[in-house]
Length: 299
Image (cartoon, rainbow, N blue to C red; front, side, top):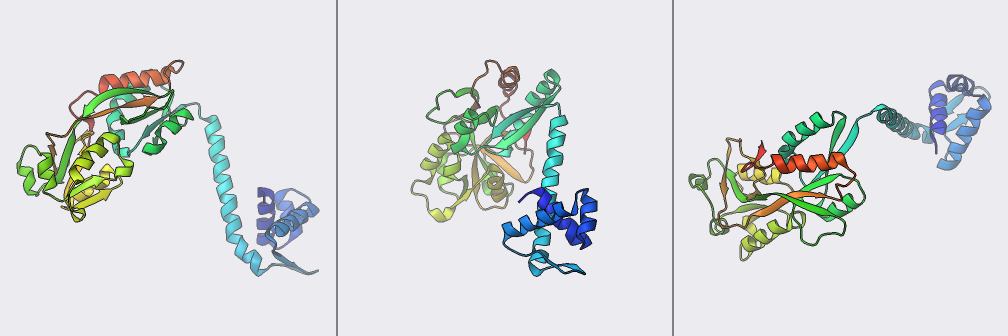
């Protein structure tokens, strides 16, 4: 099936006349007839009923009409997007995260990058933990911001940017908000909201293992992202255990450091910096600017 077949089908369906359809498409009538015959053969259905006096859609033709319009619309959009991209002289720079929550930390490094490389076009991608190294090896992303993982893949580099502490997040009216800090013992006595162990960094997984040991399952809620964990904490389902990636400016929640939790190494993964000036500059800007107790972003 090709777009010429679809165009011929739609033109005949709208005009119910092969000659007028040919005029509209600026081709010969036999060419239209041939395209319709080949389309009917592919679909194994008769799309038009033809007589010496009239042309009309069959039931199969009417059923195919919406599909044909959708196919042509998708193709047209893709073609326009391709034409636009060909004319776009900006240089794409793809940044990987495990959660869009992490994108808030990069406003200052990206501002510096725009000053140094005016034609940069930042693109953000969510990269599952299990696909981190693969995306970098295949050059699908320039860099990936992530917590340090055990077991490096050959040819992949990691540069630590900061040690990140774990925090507890609770609704502003939760009794625990009267304290200045939490301990693992506190969390073992409360319902908790945690990240899915299959989708979280290794250091967080170790912390989670300590916390969940001997804890009733009914007191635990698992989430796919930091954002959803914060939402459940705000809704009073429990205390959310998350990495302190950004500062809390949300008045409806409180955040408390977990004093006896081991800090987690957070940094940037990349394949190589040699021969990639934009990538090298970005890593350096990130290293210089991500230094505050909690990054410059907020939630």
